[in-house]
Image 1 (cartoon, rainbow, N blue to C red):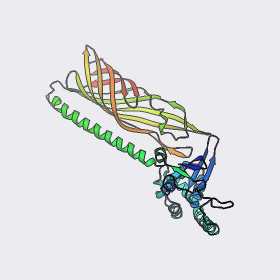
Image 2: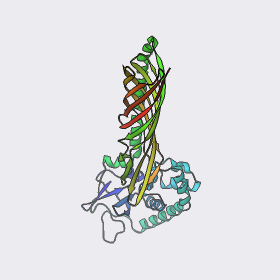
Image 3: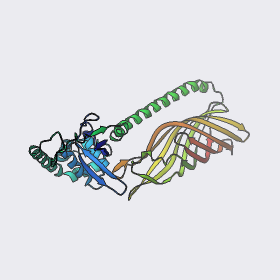
Image 4: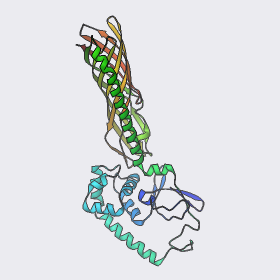
Length: 375
């Protein structure tokens, strides 16, 4: 949010509990602030009550808990609920807050034990006594401990970007819904393909099956995407290459047409990110299940083939903390899958198979060589 004080605009980050208490745009507002000074930025945080600010200060004193994580906690729980969770040692409440895992929740309960009750009591008594001595006035008179926003008048702006920053749930839910829609469309496409190919399989007179195993090198061109990193983090290095392997099986409906399913282990990917003096490395293992239609052109002992279909890509890393934010790198999508290759017949049953494959949206290339057995 932005607050205009005498023609000077101040940008503040606030928890959702404070955001929902803000008046309409252009109305007067009074906030308690906390300034965090770092080498690369001076960040101002605003709170509706003294209790919230005191709880925020207690949270950021804990090792490994940054300002953004503290804001997430205060956005998900009120100070009273947080104090009750700490008093009852209920880690389940804190785990529901985005970015707080089980171990972090247990550490917060241990570090905050006995602190929040004192904070709430002390600041409530101080605020009550201060209001009795100096009730708020309409103007900003000299010596008044309660300056008001009417002179100069404070103006408040809300933007969509601010709402997106303070409501991480919205973007996550939208992405989850899009993923579910893609999976639904992929299932419908697979059912339609099966409905079209079952009659052809039933009418096939010269069907035969095959299976095999391949190994090779993988490369992911889109792995170094920085959109999943915290806003203050930057990419230091990225390893796009690794070794992978594949097992596959198929059925030849006709001499030139086959249906094939495969599992591909795409190996590991590592990414190193930095924020100030902090550095962390994230590693994720990627794999894919695919279903394809394969068209073959026989050339004597050699066969040239191309294939197209759909692949279910899955990549997941463990949670990593950087600059006070916990993040993961991962992917779970249905994507287009294409490939080209050669089969060289060694005997009537055994082939040497070399192929190149690409998973389109993730831009993952897999170049492999292996053996295939016909039956």
